Image (cartoon, rainbow, N blue to C red; front, side):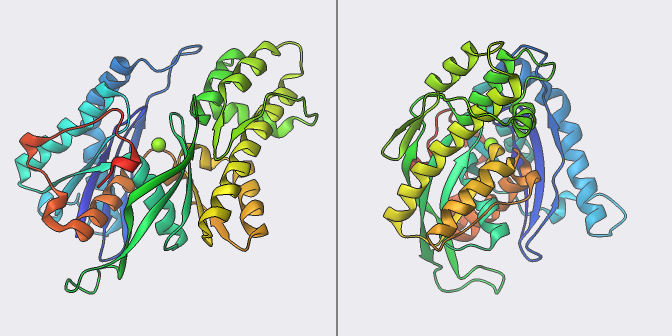
Length: 351
Ligand code: MG
């Protein structure tokens, strides 16, 4: 089957097309909202960005998929079997744009409409590319930081050869999570404290790579949970007093060490032999190498997916739409007029 997936939980409006027979994402274009200097995301402003550019991104996805297949023309709606969208968690006004677009297209072209969970999609994208079966997941993004386990189930009898032999999905259990802010928000807000031109966590990561001297900062791990706001406040107070690169380096080392300690506890408790790191912050090579080192110490493999699938994107939403259809059949879909989204939808509420 072919699924077109729409992502619009936060700064990105992304559209992906996944083909389950080729097991390939055929297109994955996106439009990214960049906040003006010194400003965070204002949900209604970001939603307006998505509303204006969304239509173009959908067209681009159909064109790219046509090119990938060598058809010389955009993919037609006839060759799309279902439409999925990220129904949460995220910013309400942004979620509404993607959900409405998906429901409209599903109604217009008479396709099943499949709501999926954004965090579940991040885990599935990493699991898919790593060819893992039942991993422990460290999900790290702007607003979310969680250590998660899922459930592996055997597929029911029947279905075509392209169907997987087993499924990985709910119930999910959140073993550990941030007690205050997400790790991506920690880096983004620190970037604003530094008054950077492009105040984004990725700039903090570049500066951290130049840092050499570790300056001690508050380190908070409680069992498998962790916290970052004390770290954020302390680091912000040291701006101008400690060399900027060293401060970025100390901030990242502290935050990543917290995640590794908590993940190690979860890995030993669950006795898994696969670990995925996923979400926007999983693009950070320092975090990945620390997590790999931790996992390998205990005989587990650890990895992630390509950056294009760790950043918010429609490809992972399309991929998960197909998986949910395979797992649940028609029960995965809703009528377009029953379209819903939930800002605070937790992964342990996914059914
Ligand atoms: Mg994300």
